Length: 239
Image (tube, rainbow, N blue to C red; front, side, top):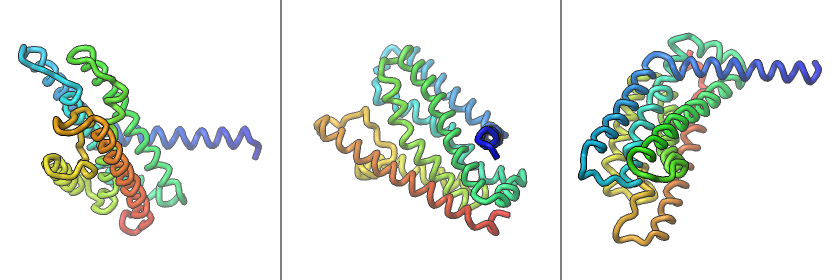
């Protein structure tokens, strides 16, 4: 087999993986989560434009944009495995050695690319309409908790293998961290807002605390992905 044929076969494989994952990502109820994210953004925008007393900051915008981001990543990561099982694609994936890992890793990349792209658009509109801020920096910081939630959902879905069950667990986890924002140490605060510096803390100290927090979230994200992939080795639990 010559190099040109190998390249063509490789490209065909990548194309098929991407097309399949795009169908899974945008299938069924994703539209409703996308619609909810857009409605939330429009509602926040309209209310703030209508209020003369509204004093927006980039710290407030972080939370306004975080909610749409979490809504967007929720469905494809929570229900992805169940969609594979329901469509019987899971049986085909397990029949091809190591192919399933490529499928789900590509899916994760596509999910985060789509979410980041939509957040980039929403952040740009917010910066133009509501309050000026660094769009790139905002999206970069938003992706840390979104990455973690998405990968944790993927891991839990490989354990529960049911979308509704995974959704319940993820909502509980999300609520715990949201409530814990007030009492968890900075390094364990999933929803730490890097744009909201506490009044009793130096900016340099806060920057260091934010950096450590992002390191912990990144490590947790990697562990979640690895555990999820390890669980996928147990074929008998899925087929």
